[in-house]
Image (cartoon, rainbow over all chains, first blue to last red; front, side):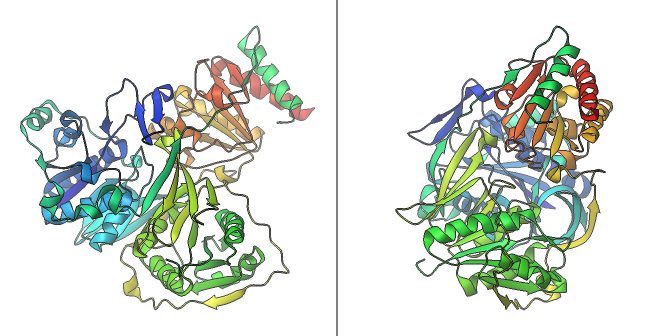
Length: 265
Length: 332
């Protein structure tokens, strides 16, 4: 099995909301005092690819697109057990939309050559778009299943479980295909000491647009079909009426009475 | 690009009934079509969905495109794309609206890319820019910490709308639409990713999405046992029990009861948040609630910035006394 997993370096989504700031001049978000991380859903995708490799053998190649990619961050898939890491690291790749991002990733996937399953997270924690996986499928002309929590490899196809509102669907999808992975898969493994040592020694492969043979005008902002006009933080009113009491039980009873009075109950 | 005109709403049908997103899509679609001075149309896809066409017309669609085929009985990505592609080729809409459901979030990006355009998912606000007549698409990003407004360079402008974020259209039975049959030339080979089974994991009682009262617990509940106390209050208020992500990841409650950005979006009359911090990701799933009540031992918890009423303290002491008092008040 040739497995390709797309991951992304993002600002830490678990950082306290108070540390989250937007620079209105650049429409960019930052968090103070927290290092970037591999996008959490991307880690679930790495875990899914490693599970397939364990069951069926093969090779896992992680691909990461961005700029200022911190090696200790983006090497996490390697330390978890991935075999190779390809970085698409260039100013030309960034500030794009789903389409231009997926175009670069698809070009890299074609250059890698052999692929049976391409995995991504269900959505990144920064854009919350959930579209890079489907876009790669459209570009490569292969089927796609989204929000997948379980994968079983059969002969020439995969049987996957896709989360839906009232349970899950079982889908049989021919290979090659794209799968987007959700947290219901189960917690990603921790890197082992051996994995961390291996990752330290392994140099990632870096591909520039010229290496992919892709016109830079089709990448990043210039290749985008959607433009972000504005990024802002919604204003919160924050008018909470705190109900007190001498004991927790008294406060609880007063809360019930206050809700009755306000006709909420 | 100048060829694209009008608004097309994909009206999802579940178990023979129009999904809530259909009326909500037609509600906002009507406003956008009026701003553009263009037509509002709809598309129905499924098996036996012809029966829903009159209802869709009464909600304001001038033309109702209907693809009624046994192959379309359940949602499967590939044939649904094929049908929408056919309808889009015929109508050339400027705007295509879907709901942010299991179906819409899968289908919207695929059809958008297939048509040479892009999609913006989970929109909470849609408006026409008076200057350029472009669709301004507002969606939460960074797990709800921020919002972004997008415009599309390409046509059609494809969106999904967040559940209950838009005011639904009201039916007017005197309104009749033109029903147009769609033959997308489907064959069994149209299906690439094939649905082989559906497994329901629905909790008993009131559906979370339909409940007027939701009692929601977080990590602080500590285990499955604690949620029984939440169930008791929910039952008393004829509501449903939900959870933030940690209890579901820990298996205390099924994943189908998760409320938040990647779980269910609810907008009940009353939302009682117990022992949960109120992360942006979680609030994305419940911020449309009319009244939020918080019980949390940490006075600095974000949930108190979102709630209307709150009690600071240990839920294990507060909840039993609160439930007892509610029971007494309801009996009186």
